[in-house]
Length: 122
Image (cartoon, rainbow, N blue to C red):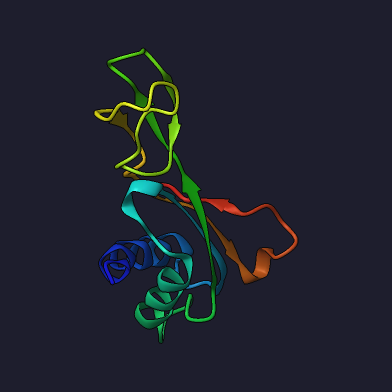
């Protein structure tokens, strides 16, 4: 479960941003090539955030596709699998970019439930 390794940095970033205030929601954007599974991410987050101001936060995962270019036919588009073949010519060897990032997109604080989520910085 590699989500634990990913969550170590996420929990640390949430704690820095929250500055001790209660966190109710965490939104994470992850590339599909990381193969992050939302229930596993939420479980890892809960384990690592136990005893912090984010202990009861709900984790929301937004999956981001990878961009693909086919050197054979020139297709440019999105894929959700690193082993995908070109959807146009069905050849392998797609050149992939993106889809391997993970970003703490926003956190929602308990005192700001009715306000917009706080964008995460740094």
